[in-house]
Amino acid sequence: MRLILATSSESRRQMMAKAGLVAEAIPARIDEEAVRASLDAEGAKPRDVADTLAEMKARKIAERHPDAIVIGGDQVLVFDGRIHGKPDTPDQARDQLRSMRGQTHQLLSAVVVYEEARPVWRHVAEARMVMRPFSDAWLDGYLQRNWDSVRHSAGAYKLEEEGVRLFTEVKGDWFTVMGLPLLPLLAWLGNRGFIDG
Image (cartoon, one colour):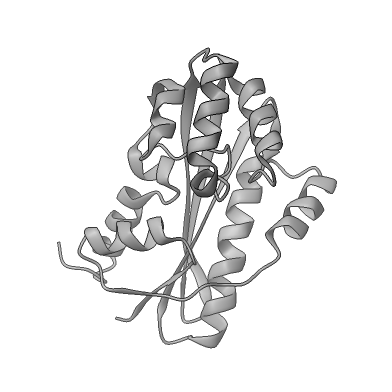
């Protein structure tokens, strides 16, 4: 069965490849900010926002490739009851990280699978991220060293890079933190016979 990952995320593509899955990556171009704003205006819960974005990506690619199993994924960062997006500027990243230091926030990673252009399975996983009370001086240096990379990440950090130093504890699995709940996805694909195991 042909597998398509509806993403432009290099980390999601690499996760699939390292798990031994041959999946074609096709970016699903949707206006995520507009969708989030619309859902927020409707009072949608963060979990539903992540799920909706994952489904929209999967649906868009599945409509063009109904013969494939299409996997859509998305992740949202939730702090203080609000969804936080990718920072536009270093100042915005600094303000966001200052507000989260010494606190706990959540990463919600959703995956939706389409088969024959229909949704057949979905899952939302949660990781809780506990930030340490770092100094302003360290934060300034961190952003100077890492801005080019972290500007593309909600929360302005990457756990696989220097961003790991922002945290004292991570409650949840690595794949959820990286943006794709891979373990339940692999179990579902195996149970359906789409992969060996």
